[in-house]
Amino acid sequence: MKQFLSGSGVDTTATVLAALKANNFVFPADLILIGEADDPRSLWLTNWETPLAWPLWGTFRSTNIRRDKITSKIGLESNALSLLWSPLNQSITSSLGTASAYQLARLGVFDNWRVRIWRTYMPTPGDANTWGAAEWFAGWIGDVKVETGLITFQVNDYLYCLNQKVPTAVIESTNTLASYSGGVPPPDFSVMPQFNVIVGAGTSPTVLYADQISPNSMSVPHTDTLNNGYVVFNGGAGATLRGQYALIARNLGWLDGGGHNHTEIQLYGGLPWAPTPGVDTFYVSAQAPINQADANYQGFPYVPAPETAA
Image 1: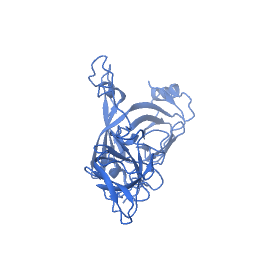
Image 2: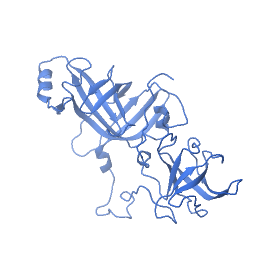
Image 3: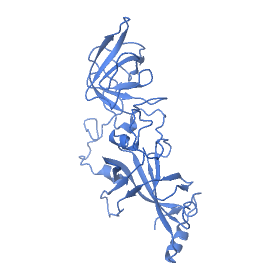
């Protein structure tokens, strides 16, 4: 039997086992954490009809979420399950800070987030504290499917990362499976340059007009030196595109009506919406970040919108 820990961290396994052996009626529920415990953007969910407090980890809010059956496999074979979630809020906005979970899922915000699932057996309805919960499943979000009124997360367990056929002793810079890097300075830079989207220049989802903030304030990169790199948007107060990134088609200088030089960046594909001039900032990397969740998180949280009907 898995170890149960109460809300204060006390081992209650023997108590839970005795209750089950005595055929006492218990109230089961899932406690689901999507994201990291110290990340304010994380989702604390339960399939119970009311919020459940398990002080060892936190309070899990009641929502319409369910999962596939969890199975056990012998050996190192990877396992997976599907989480099916139907958030009530379906509002569409042009800011990641207020967007619904459906919109965030479509934009790939949840890609590769960690998922932890615990099972609680409650002696009385709503009491997840006394007996606590036991670890049930853990992994990372893989494929995400968004339908009307439903988000389906495929959660791959921790062994999934071992299901790569990497030749023995080929862990080196030439091995693409092992040579991921976060941010890489573009040509002519020793660090990744930071930019501020300027006001009054007609910035759009496919064309950015910006000023360099650092390392060389107001300097304009040489034409086409940023080509095939990536713009990656920062967080911060009022930021609307935190973590979103796009491939650069080309860069060049742009002269405004007052005779001042700025940087113009043209994008392949584009962003989900135009950034907010004077508020949104971004950096440029010669390579893509590993995933959006890792894209220069600066501590400004995504706080889920209230679970009310749109």
